[in-house]
Length: 337
Image 1 (tube, rainbow, N blue to C red):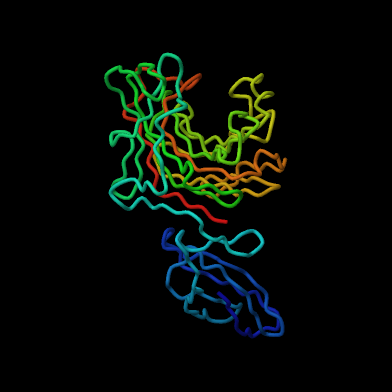
Image 2 (image 1 turned 120 degrees about the horizontal axis):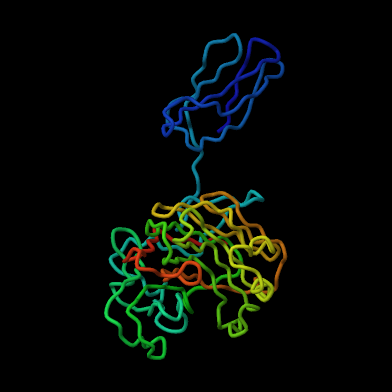
């Protein structure tokens, strides 16, 4: 919003204040100096209520300026976000999980292939309402425990744990852009739960059997043994080096991971990656916590989206104290280009 006016003095300091409802107080938005009795400046109205702005040049009464926010263009992802170059992102994929079931034109539940955990405690991924469901505006992926039985997806290996994971496998993939999800996991401060919002190469284009060289973008992995962290990880051929380094110290060796991304368990957190040919930046609740500018060729192919509720392994292994069911709740997933 543009605010302009006149002052009695040729050069006077003008303070512009806006009402912030969340803080229930007037907050200084900007301070500008007039020239030849005039001033004109642009003010951000983010977080400002609909009360008129207070504009106070020195030695003059407070002037009230009505708030007139600019109309923000929108698309399927909501209000269009601005890129660093000033242009707008364009929505290419969105799911707000507002229906009563999983939209299978967008998502495929995981039932074969991989698992999490260790040799003693591992989960069978199932396409079952107990493990994958949509209700009350969110996707719910659950880790549960029941009778020990063979798991078809694990070549008949038996386990009492079942869990949920979905992906856009052969339904949607994209090279570069912004990928974002708002999620909530089970509140816990003991080991055993492992959740992930991650990207995996599209196997129609990439030979994923060559992992880690083929790449993987873990936007946010959360571990109940680290109840106030979200850990991003960019998997490439670097993994061969990192495999020689203790789990907790991997962040000291490379910019492929970070252990400074604060995200408390049990509450909603927003995770995003902005990805281009030359740079990958990962954000947690709007705060940049990982930047990689290596330009690795593994990250120059289309990737699918995956969401997983898993069982922990290694230093985050399942114990009798692990709370079950463990639920990974997803409010929305949005992608832009």
